[in-house]
Image (cartoon, rainbow, N blue to C red; front, side, top):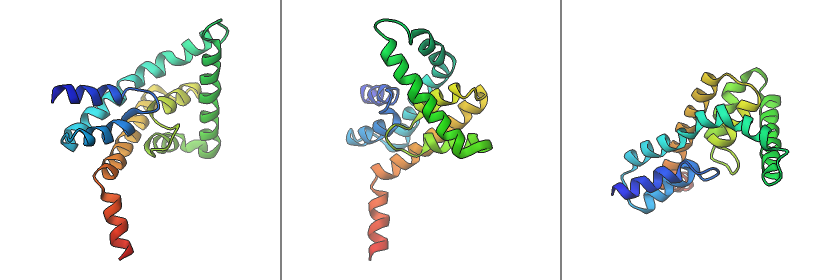
Length: 160
């Protein structure tokens, strides 16, 4: 059982997959939902401070390097575009925008992209971590409800 928890822990740390993929995997492994939710949240949040503190510096340093320049420029452009789009729509409500950006489980959104965008926008560290954490909690609840089939039950009840 510990091996399965380690799997979902590490899956939740992977960019683009994150907790959004790890929670359904935990249910496919028939793990209890609440401990899985907690393990996935911890795994998804561990990279956040590292991304905030070092990703921007690494990407800016690597953008003109021979082998990694292309990927560094790609992530700088993607992160900057996501941040600017978020800020243009949110204005002063950037905290809530970041929370929702991370919390609504759509492709390309999540803790990794949200944290990178926040660091490129020079959001405060504390605000970034809190907004991302609340977003991860929200995304986890949404994925948990979907994994348990609650959306199907609600839609079936509304349809009858």
